Length: 478
Ligand SMILES: Cc1cc2nc3c(=O)[nH]c(=O)nc-3n(C[C@H](O)[C@H](O)[C@H](O)COP(=O)(O)OP(=O)(O)OC[C@H]3O[C@@H](n4cnc5c(N)ncnc54)[C@H](O)[C@@H]3O)c2cc1C
Image 1 (tube, protein in one colour):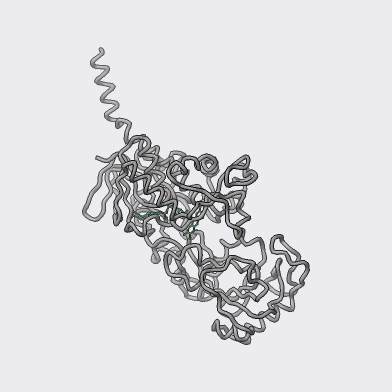
Image 2: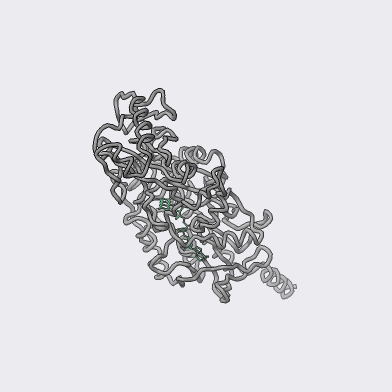
């Protein structure tokens, strides 16, 4: 029988498999995707948020535990478990040497992402290279890897793991780590979680999924129905505004539209609906998916003029371009008269001071609702560009409740051989909100813990055996 079975094939699963193998356990990893699509959402990532008290290789200055914690506390609005959050934060300070030992390389951020040079270590070659390095290392260490292996059921004995099932096949193991992602790829479940709005629409029908198509939440649902303790709200997720032309799955990072703060955003009625200049874009990009999701038809249009070009990371597809604003309205399929009224009202309301996109500048609007509080400049310089936006789901936050050992809980009791890591439990730390790089920090910390704990559970003689052994010893020595 295998010692440790790891279910999933992304960062959390690989960290768990590697740690369990290093601890001397025999390990099998089951990835539902075929080899060429392996790596889940982790293959799309770029960086890891790291605590550090002094400059460290690719990280500048310091990012102490307290500041990291306060950042997390702020974005989650307190919906976080401090013990588990601090555990992940501390683990982020000393995991990189271990990651390097498995072939992961780091680099400083490129110029378009300088604001995170202090807090985030970037993977050289991105998440794809990280995942490939981990698979290579796992293979070399003798981890058995199976692709096209979607687990659909878990056999339990009380709170103990017994076996995983793939259709009629049954795989037993002494311990198990669940790391099979959230349910973001399951459009039906998203539909159910988001429900119907006051306009009779099902908003989730217009969502795009930024990452893998394989995170269907099958095991999350199975475990919750089997009595595992859950945490988090199914409608909470990381959701950003992305290019409406992005594919349904796996569009990845290059479909993000980053020019919102440099122009205005309109809905399908050609009306503005939120302060585009509320705060720096890195602090606000993650709210725009939800904002667009609340609009009619779940669509938005980011409108800029020539002055914005070169000031943001361009998306992969060029925007719709026009020499005049009425022409842009027509090309975007928006009502021309309303569009012009909205833009003219905005232009007239701009009070331009000293434009500076690197600070919260004094360019703002007066007498228009909603206000634009920074970087407000009239849209008056041709050519004009428009990008249609859709809500892009990154990952969902509903998960299984854990303790510091990453154990799955049943009725408040930790299982002694079933563990969970990554998106499947990220909701313990992320009740809502997000700060860049924390997904991989959680997955790496709890993936490593889960792997270590699973190996320990598998390699320690079972409790019953231990009790029998001690009775025998007592008997033999009495
Ligand atoms: C476009 C994009 C960019 C991102 N960028 C960053 C970033 O730069 N930094 C950051 O910290 N976070 C980022 N994230 C979030 C990050 O991807 C996740 O937090 C992290 O990868 C989660 O790791 P995981 O191992 O839990 O899940 P995943 O990497 O998604 O892995 C889940 C795995 O489980 C497998 N699986 C699912 N169901 C089953 C089943 N029933 N049986 C067997 N296998 C199954 C899947 O195929 C997949 O391999 C990004 C996400 C996206 C989509």
